[in-house]
Length: 502
Image (cartoon, rainbow, N blue to C red):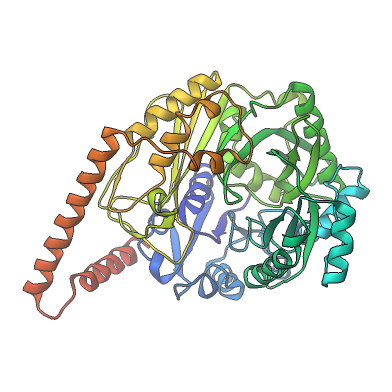
């Protein structure tokens, strides 16, 4: 097993990996940008090294800086978390050249799955059902119109080199085709540096369901059940649950076996997720494969009892899986809410700033919180605004829902806006409680008039009062100190404190 691992990420996922390393007797090494100098993952790691800069390009996306830190600190492996460089095949190649183990798949399957048109072609050849559409990127409007006529409307224009809703446009008829094509190409170029897009048949009222797999270096691949990921806003997942309330046992089994076949067909190793679109008749089609750990991995851990991060580390170290498919018997139900620093009342705009007060609800049986923040932490605007993930487990779906509602009611975070009220609304909606929802659920719910509770009004008033008090105190402090900004003094104090911790 490795003695020291560098974690090339930040926030709650870096904290999650640090904790797994500690339990396995591995020294975790953190890296940080200038604005993350006081971040929780920096404070928890045994060693932490500055990357400099504030933007992702200057820090967490800078391959050579990260590799230089790995060399200097004597790390034997790199864990990428998710996002940033987690699915960058070039980064995997550079780790391989440096003699560093990459905690994830080899570069070749990652590269294959990173290009959507290529992955569709490979999966089709492996006998995995794919959504009807084009196998090659569309380069000009003549090919576009010919392909659209063949696929039929409605259809999706999708970026070949990315995901997360970027470079994606729904086209309902021919009049929208040209403008949708130009917008999809422009967004794909700005987001991924690749303007290539392809066409996929649009499936009405779909479910987005993914299957977790583990594959070792000794020929064994297993699936660990599915996650229902249909609760999405603008193609971004916000709440996940397992098992899916929509699937039956036979469809669940066939999807798991298909996911294993898909992974084996590309020589995949380590943890990965095969994503499917499922129509109303439970026909399922390959969507994409995420060659990394998923944000929502904790709900699979809660029902299987398998630590996926530890499994990642063991597989990367060459240790065979000690699991057989018949050993994996998920128990109960689990849900995850992604707590973002966003304002649900203002079109979910990011809400960076200082956390004035924080009470975590991670207490009581069946509740877990994976967090990357603390009271007093300044949430930066440079990165994804994910603060924490709240997970609830129950013997039944109803019990898990009750626990999640209870935990959300205990959540207290003042100084910034969060998505906690948004989740309270979802978890009280009759359609969600009945398990009757598709990827259109949130868009439909947002058209309804929200009912603001008296508790939410009281919290809003209290938060506004605390912020006013905070501002007044620091304005007075600034006046009494003269030209020296208390924010600057605070930053120096934090820098000194962090230096001593490292």
